[in-house]
Amino acid sequence: MKRALALLIALTFIAGGAACARKPEVKVAKRKIHKFFLKYGKEFPETVYGKHPVTDVDVSTREEIHKNLIAADAYLSLSGGDMQKVSVTLERRFIRWKVVSWEKLL
Image 1 (cartoon, rainbow, N blue to C red):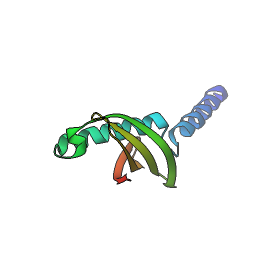
Image 2 (tube, rainbow, N blue to C red; image 1 turned 45 degrees about the horizontal axis):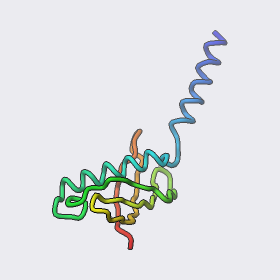
Image 3 (tube, rainbow, N blue to C red; image 1 turned 90 degrees about the horizontal axis):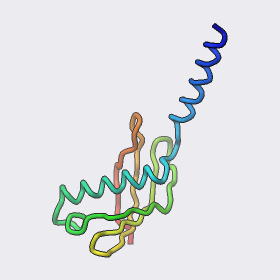
Image 4 (tube, one colour; image 1 turned 135 degrees about the horizontal axis):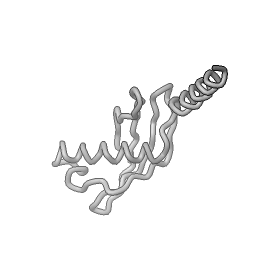
């Protein structure tokens, strides 16, 4: 009984610690930003992202605005050979991260 209780407590701390990351990992941020701009290009084909889809994303900085809200600066490589810098805000929903807003930087 004591062994089972100790195991349950240990698993709770391990699972709780892993589930409460304050910032997404770089690869998670890259994947979310890349997927967002691919969908954006399909929804708005007359934009730069529709004419020249994003091929690669390089996340340069990630800063926490407050709990569950992250600002990330990223460089987008487009299929036409251009590169754009964007600022993206990611919000942590239940388990996943979601792009909330973005703006193109000069």
